[in-house]
Image 1 (tube, rainbow, N blue to C red):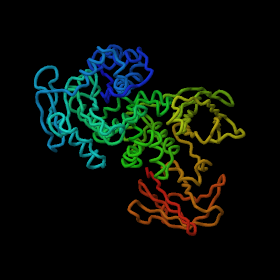
Image 2 (cartoon, rainbow, N blue to C red):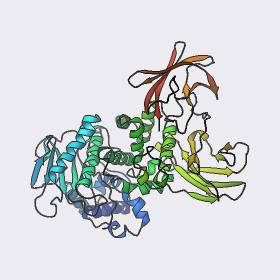
Image 3 (cartoon, rainbow, N blue to C red):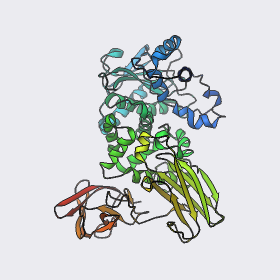
Length: 552
């Protein structure tokens, strides 16, 4: 059986908006690709086994952006193209329907012809109820807005039909209020998923979780074409969060692991859905929901950053920790740590592999904002893996195409300005602004632990955050003091149970003051994995924040 990598498309048909200065060739390309996908005749169907570029990059990136541009430029399409797009994007009329057990969804389908479902419609209805129960009832997202009796009643409409090469799509219908960029929607699902990475009812289940969250996103928050990847990132992650045993998202991982250097904002979203799996594992789902609450007034990267800052975390620390998680995959996977399915993930490709054969080896490269640049050094006895991580949040939001000249040097002896990795190796990173960079370095698969606080973080936030007993020995916590002395440090659980209390000496680094703590209780026992609240009290001045701790 041929395995086909399929993208979810969020299709919008609101022709009152027109994007300026789009070339006819570009419009034709968008049109031909989308119509080909819906008809199942897209050129990719014949080339998917032979063209690695299409398999790993183009196909997954043509989904939401493609459909959205057709909507934005509808009035610039040729008359015959407009006619075809209207036909494809009109609300379907099918011959039969059932109501889901919850009474929330109406599932429409045909009992004859090419659109007959190959899986149980009753099971599909339960799948949508499950997606609603998890995403709305349990996680607390608002339900998508009603369509005001379109489709026959005020239930949310699902249409099952032959979608060609697509799993499903969430179709925009009416803007809720002018200028809001929020829309009523209905969902289309493929009728059989034959030949897809996942087939039958399991494919329908993850598609229900994926597309239903799209209806929440655009119905309650905002649709912003510049952040298409974030919509797909979130919905693809919720496939695994709602249905963790199906793992349809595995098909997209090679696109990211083969190209971690492209930068967070330049991904398709499908391929970096594991970012939200990381956030969900470490911080819980509330931080993802908070990002959507921030989306109407913030770009996606800024919403992520703000949600972390509100928890006294930084994007720098979170992205560096995430980078470490993507290192420990496949044969490097560590049982009980990092991603639950890490053993099934690919290994991240290095941008350079060098043999250590001199006193120093240098790699020069250009890096994108919010990118993870993997470098490998090898000799007869050692393998040194390096992750040079760009953490420039502002550029990630506003200048994703920027390039930064970067130089990493590995030495075999101590050098001025170099960081000691062990007795045999030292390293140095040459970049224009050190505050926008971070590194993870591994010797023979073991991460190099540096217990010195970075000058950009000590005294600003808890660092490192998350704190992991396996890789960290000290936590640096900010204090309000501008001089010195002692402060009282209290650590609480999220239920406000006092876990630790002690008077601590104040230290200073780069003009910033902080206290240190080993992450252990007064009886020297480690804490359980979870979120904790810290409070430092200096006289009448109090600083407080949250800290994630891993006990692995």
